[in-house]
Image (tube, rainbow, N blue to C red; front, top):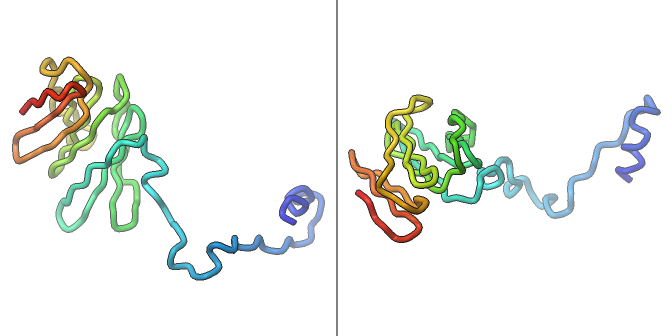
Length: 145
């Protein structure tokens, strides 16, 4: 019983038997989860971008964002803290687009490149980068290009 082993952990110098693997994963190691981005995100859709020969995914985490390398789900960057919660994400080449309330903030890694504001009166819900253009849609359905 693991509870008894845990309770006497410091009281005995005898080695404890290894913990058993739950029966759901005993069938094989192929389907055992290693890392999952969805467990650390705020529930917003992620932004996926290819750069060079690698694929990166950007996930929201409250008032900040994190960028992961998809090959090993290794965290490669954590964005700066924003004044409000993130409502949408987008990515294009080296740029990360972050909707924060009614504003869209553009970063190139940690460097703030631009803040696009004044067009929306409701929180931005969707972002799309196409070439040098950014398309955003707010909660009322207003599309700004």
